[in-house]
Length: 142
Image (cartoon, rainbow, N blue to C red; front, side, top):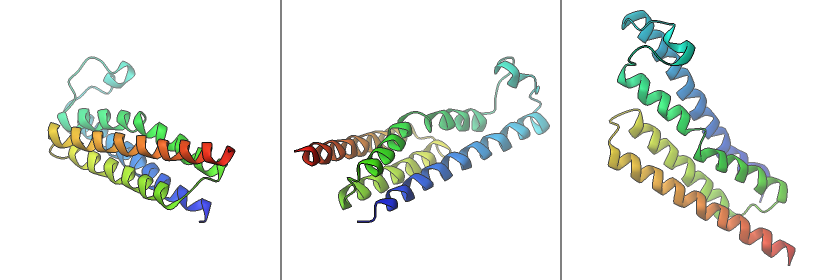
């Protein structure tokens, strides 16, 4: 299996992060220009109330730098150790799909149960991915 294909799910995650960051920037401009938020709010993130859509987007942007960090580390680890297999590729794509699901819910209806389920599913998939990596790493050294 060509090892470089492990980077494709990572590129989608990076695209999702850029999308969310650009959305956040747009919502910040709109909050200042059309909703009366004082731009000085962003000096210390205090002194005003953010619109709900901006709050959700900022929280989601932060989420993209939490659990996905372990995903990025996994991708690099799999590539460096040359332990890629079909299961790992599948699990990585499932993790990306779970994050897309999480993003859709969080930035859309923000339904807590659906958002939690997307998060838990992604966490389980990531755990299985790391378990698969550990198995291959241990098998490779024996």
